[in-house]
Amino acid sequence: MKKAHSSPSTPCCALLYSPQFSQYLYGPSHPLRNERLALTYGLIQAYGLLELERAEIREPRLAEEAELLSFHHKEYLQALRRADAGASFPSAFTWGLETSDNPIFAGVYSWSLLITGASLSAAEAIEEGGFDFAFNMGGGLHHAHPARASGFCYLNDPAIMIHYLVKRGRRVAYLDLDAHHGDGVQEAFYDTDQVLTISLHESGETLFPGTGFPHELGWGKGKGYSVNCPLYPGTEDEIFLWAFEEIVPPLLSSFAPDILVTQLGIDTHRTDPLTNLSLTLQGYARAVTRVRGMARKWVALGGGGYNLNNVPRAWTLVWAIMNDRELDPAIPQGFLEAARSLGFTERNLWDPPATGSELAREAARKYAEKQVGIIKESIFPLQGIKG
Ligand SMILES: [Zn+2]
Image 1 (spheres, rainbow, N blue to C red):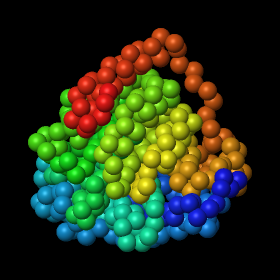
Image 2: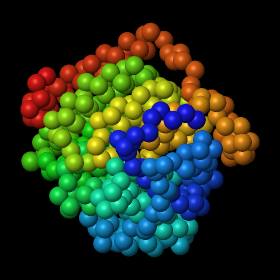
Image 3: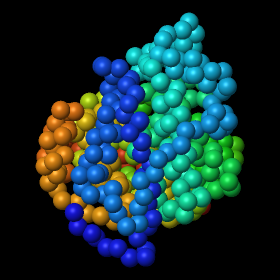
Image 4: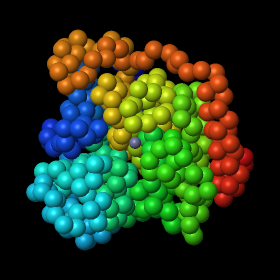
């Protein structure tokens, strides 16, 4: 590990983590593997990133029910509490529970309180703890709806945490780079100009949850504050980063948030088993580095990521980028030996170059150009940006 630089301008960073993150299991055949969080913490440790001069590892608190009510319905929370025992009950399906995506497992409510509490702790680290940046790798469960579990998400920790910030009078920009549209968070702030939501994702034409098109641009006072850039299956780094550059910097610069919240799912990766985008770790790291450069105050959350070889590398990079550290491309040997039994076998931090066809690239480029064009025509004027 090499120190890029360390000066008073180096930010103070908080990592919210609990060993309890990975103690609850969705089930043996569920794609969301909570062991990915323990693996990530292990890799962060193996790279020596737990003992940094201006960073702190913090134990998260649990979320309180009153905080959940800023987004969720009371009756849904009662159902979720009932599900905590791990047994089915008659009305479970009404709340989106006990489906193959959102199984009832022992401790489902306790785990959700911990993950949401960690996102709130991350925001508090900045608001009250004097930190510049904070990272909750367990958070980013962006699909949960007010009264329904959805897409592996039971409590919408980004929405609840942003509500906490809005209550404190903050202008918040939420940037979602997960392969799936951040539908629950968009829904939470669709009619307000206090929160700008931007989501880049695989098109809803080919992927869950089927929403996230440019015409979903907000309602009432919120018109022009909901931004969606769908992308074509097979989209690689170059096109993803082009769309990112066209949209994100001008919008963040015109909105001028007090605080930036990002959902940094790594299911955009080309080897992710659930999605069809084709990013590499290099492309992902470039996007995160750009985010780092634009953020004054920043809460980073995890999100999707269903290949256990990708998640630890991606979120270790997030923590390294946050702290201005460069990493040795060779995964530390000691970590490899310990992590192999949990399914991590990657020896290199970075991926081999892209291998897609020129034809597929052209299709992805045309699709992205069209979406970016629509956003520039419809949203940029509302935000006072010259297209
Ligand atoms: Zn996702």
